[in-house]
Image 1 (cartoon, helix red, strand yellow):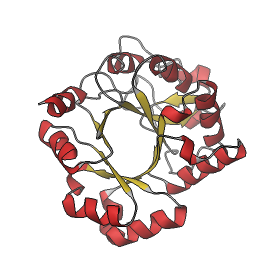
Image 2 (tube, helix red, strand yellow; image 1 turned 30 degrees about the vertical axis):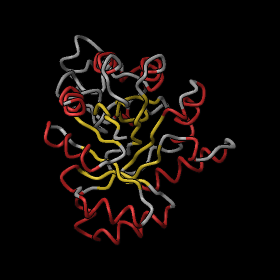
Image 3 (tube, rainbow, N blue to C red; image 1 turned 180 degrees about the vertical axis):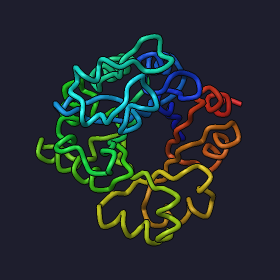
Image 4 (cartoon, rainbow, N blue to C red; image 1 turned 180 degrees about the horizontal axis):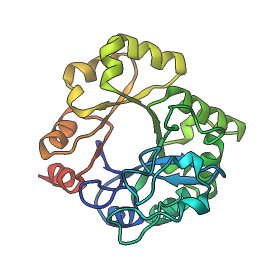
Length: 251
């Protein structure tokens, strides 16, 4: 079964990664909500796509440079006065719903990791009994490795998750090719990959299946792209228009 993930809570329907977007997504006939985790200077886990707050709020600067209280001075544009939500608040919205989590571990503006962020993410998911309802993703394979280690330190493993998924950019594919991508996955022990929707076809699906890798999609924002994801049988895909994906599923 191909699962639908509302990307950033439905970016083309509501202000992305906001409580409003998440509350509305929780009402939809989707399987997952996708969102992005950063860490403040005082180690608070917050939900925002960019490492900087410039694009989506009335402030400027890097999340890593703000304390949580300082960050709360700024309002998300178009949200009706909302501040950037925390991971805990986001979990609270979806815990009672039928919508599971597709969590992306982000990095700083310079692509360096937030020090020690993976353990606290695991702890918040465990405290809310949401670990088994969560896919963990990242464009940085070392972050997935760090999350796996954090689970092991807690007497768990990545098999507890809905998925541990490497988000693979078209640039990486262009640089090292599909065989190179498969080799890199093997080195990190990751067996799931998410590819940009237009990069996926039957040949790609077959190649990864033969190498024991599960394929997910991202950026399937149109009806046609969503239909292709269902036709190809990807495990899940993200979309800015979950309403169109739902219609494609039932159409």
